[in-house]
Length: 164
Length: 212
Image 1 (tube, rainbow over the protein chains, first blue to last red):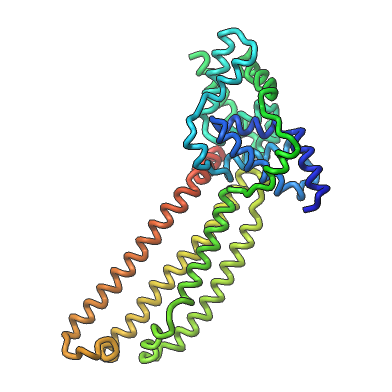
Image 2: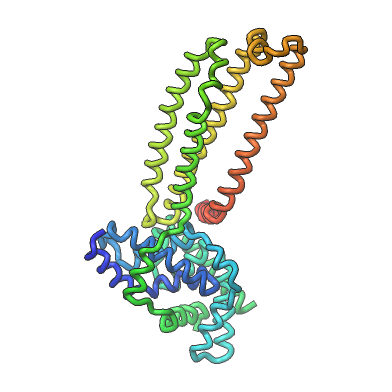
C-alpha cells in the first residue's frame, strides 16, 4: 500500500482515536485488554482503509469496524486474562467533579453497562454516541423497530438499577 | 435531569483521560500482526485441507497392492479422480466465501459470512469422513465376500488358523479403528472450534433472537 494512503490514514486515525478508545472502554475492563483490543481495531481499520471511499462519514465507518472487531473478530489474548481487572469506571469518575450521589449513580450505570452482553453493549454505545436508530439498525444488521425495542429494554434496565 | 441524559453527558466528556497515541505509535500498531478469529479460521482451514489432502497422498503404494488381487484398482482410480474434483470444488467455495468476509459489513452479515466460510470446511471434513466410511465398507464387503483370496494374502504363513475367527477379528478391528477415528475428529472439533467460535456463536444467537 502506498505511503500517501498510509500517511492519510494515520493522520485521520490520530484525530479520531477517541472513538476507538471509547469502544475499548465499553468492551474491556483492564488496561492490557484495552490496549489489545485497540491494536486489533487499528489493524482492522487500516486493512479496510484502502476500500474506504467516503460514502459514509469516517466516524460511522470507524464505529462499524470498531464494534465488529470487538463483538466478532477479537479474541482475548492470554495477557489480558492474567492481569487483574480493575474498575475502569472508578478511575475515570474520580477525575471529574460530581457530587456524591451523581458519582454513585454514574458508577452504578457504568457497572451495569459492563454487565450487558456484547450486542447490548454495542446498542448502548451507539445510543451514547447519539447515533440515530436508522444508523444503529444498519450497523447491527437488524430492523429499526427491533433496535428501538431492545434499546428501550436496556434503558429501563439501567433506570431500574438506579431506582429500584 | 433524566438519568440517561446525565450518563450521555458524562459519556461525551470523556476523552481527556485517554492516552493520546502519536503518529509514530499508530504507525507501529498498524504494522503489527492481526490476531482476529478470521485469521485463525483461515489458518486452521488451510491446515485441514492440507491434512486431508496429505493423508490420501501419504498412503504408501504397497497398501493398494492387495486391492489389485480383488480387481479393485479401476474402482479406486475413478474414486480418486472424483475425489480430487470434489476437493477443488470445496477449495473454490471456501475461497469464495472467505473473500466475502468484510469487516465493513453490518455485524449480522459479518457473522453470517464467517460462519458460512467455516461451514464450507465443516462440509469438507464431513465429506472426507463419509468417503472414508463408504470406502471402508465397500472395500471390506468386496474383500470379505472373497475370503479365500483375503486369507491367502493376509496370513500366508499360517494357513491353518481358524478362518472364521480370523475374519471376525478383522471386522472387529476395522470397526474399532473407525470408531476411534470418528471420536478423535469429534473431540478435535469440540476443542478447536469450541474455543474459537464460542463468543461468535453466542453473539450471533443473541443478534438473531432480536429479530424473532
